Image 1 (cartoon, rainbow over the protein chains, first blue to last red):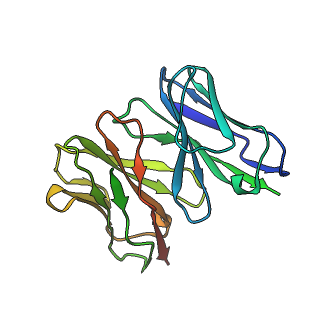
Image 2: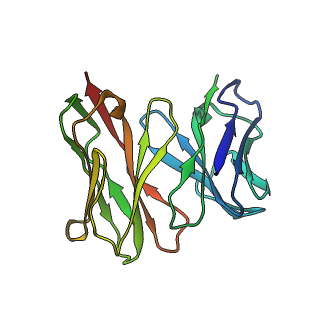
Image 3: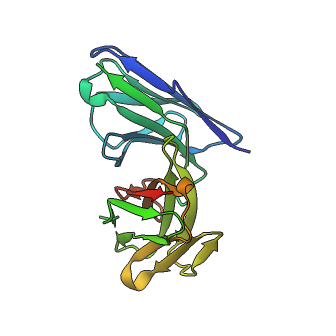
Length: 112
Length: 114
């Protein structure tokens, strides 16, 4: 069966520090991968998605970037965190565009 | 552009009550997919159901049921005999055929009191 891992679970970082969140999927190949952010107030904001290795689409211009160095690995990065980057970050995968998404446990990021 | 509206921000019920969560969508496409997800306090979204635009058949799964009506562009979710464990934020989502990008509603927070 498929599993999605995401780490760390929580992170407290100072403003201006770098960020690296990792997400890996097991048990499937060539998944579509997604990064979301959920700020207080519940709404899900799609940040990036990827349909293949090295293929990244950005939905929101900001100081975050994403990379997909391997088929089942998706990394969210920032060179310098802002206060506004605080939030709950969720990674998700789906077999295809018309299928449901399966979410990871999330990373709660607090930027101080 | 497509849109998903969950007008109910928060619903509070007492255990064993039935509750319906509304979802209204907008799209001009004829091929699309609708989803419901549950986000319990732990934070991880859990997939509940998918419906494609050509399948208006209603679905029942235990205490959960879904009513898909294209005539009103609605995909409502009913929980029968609610339980405290049903307390969560519920999201409705829409993906157009051929698109990789789902559109999520803002979610409905359901609080079930014992």
